Image (cartoon, one colour):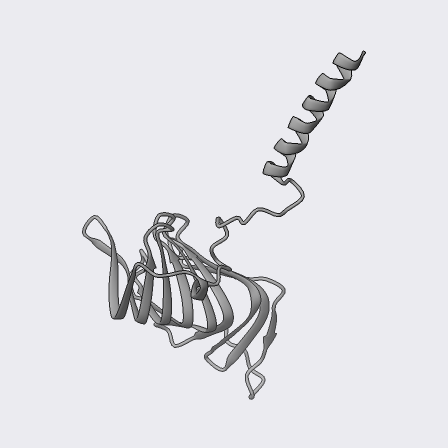
Amino acid sequence: MKLEQKHLFWILAAVLFLIALWRPWQQSKNNSDLWTTDFKEMKADFTFEGISYTRNIGEKTQWVLKANAAQLYEDKNIMDLERIRIKFFPTGGGHVIVTADSGVYRIDDDEMSLNGDVKIHSEDGSTLFSETMYFSQKKRLIWTKDKVLIKGDSLEIKGEGLEYDLQKGKLTVKRQTAVLPENGELEL
């Protein structure tokens, strides 16, 4: 019986040792959500000032990004951007200009997160305002879950959440309210 207890002791000790190495009770650091990563704690591989980055598919320019500063983290394939201006060229023609205080561009996923004083200006003169905005080249979609305000042609639309399909040029504002122009007339 002492021999069985001795083996049981070593098995139990080995299991406890493996659990101590694995540490399931501690949260692992998951770097997959790099939208919220604090880049100040990481060392950039390259730092740029006054960059311009053009995204083409074939012969067609999809968008042109300009930023005052950028830090590239090669191992994450991410660019942290400051003072951003992006000019999109929708399929139907024309252009849409997006500006923001800062952002993160995931190069492999071709996705971007924009933060702080985000403005989207369309050629028709309307402007959209929000604090955050996300963009996916693969989905050809711009979206946010934050509050939005759209101003144009004496009409204001407020909402919470938005999707803009760059392929179709279709805008969807969620939980919206419309404010009529000062003269009370609404042209349709």
